[in-house]
Length: 425
Image (cartoon, rainbow, N blue to C red; front, side, top):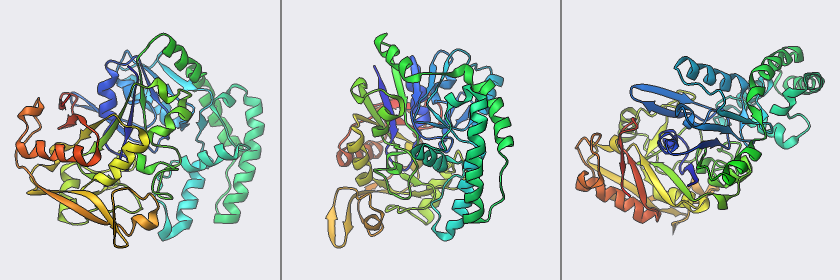
């Protein structure tokens, strides 16, 4: 079976754990979008792995890991992750494939990201300053883009970098008063990247289609979340790629009809990092309770996440545009101790009720939540093994979410470990 796993909220849903679990029975795991701005956490026994570019299946020794053409690759980050796993006894030799067509994030992208964000002042988007947006901009602009395959001809690459850095320096100086960069320093790093990355580089799309012909099981891993999708999220407070399932085909060259099941991942509540509208946000004692109990701090940035009630309007929208077949619910154990729980079932905008998520931020910022209130629970559910053993209020909460979203919950996470998962079906 081929599966695609995507987040249905504003990222940080816990996709890493689900991908890790499903990777046990997958031959290949594919990361198809985003960059090092994504942070996927996997916990094996008492060891925590924080991955930013390698697919979460990397910690499964027998799984082939593919970084698709839709990913923008920070060479230092991916090489660092390879080295870290190696020191922990996990080798990626002969099981990591890097698309020749993936674009590279270089030092001038990070500089541009930082200068641009600083210039926006109070209007900043909330980027992670990892150079992701500027790299995607160069990809779209084409003329100043550098891909993995460019590392094969260093002489040609050197000439290209001289022109690129000359252009970037003009931008840095004219728009931001920034200090110039040296093309030679960027090139010297690229020489190292060439030596260390090219052994993994190939035509990843050809590999995936060959794997499909051989009837291998492939798991496609999304980054960030649907509400951060460049085209269908809360623009401009989004990421620079198609973070929904709609980005899968473009990001690796495999059509959606080759995927048997699309799985959406949600938290039992809602979080968001950075700026942008957040209708169910609880900037109060309830939000603080969820943040501290759920350890809601960014894997990539360490920033505290904004926390709020579950938004069924937003999740139903994400599930619809991504064609979700079933949902994996994460962090259900975090809600224990709250006397009552609220679920947003509709918005009220300009006096009218709607059940459809308006990705337009002007409309969304006006949204008033229409809540359904359910009783909470005090019981510790982190050790429960089956759905029937969950307290009645927990089961009622899950069923209400299923009713409002219109998709069945198939997996329920009640803690960070692999074993802390309940299979509802």
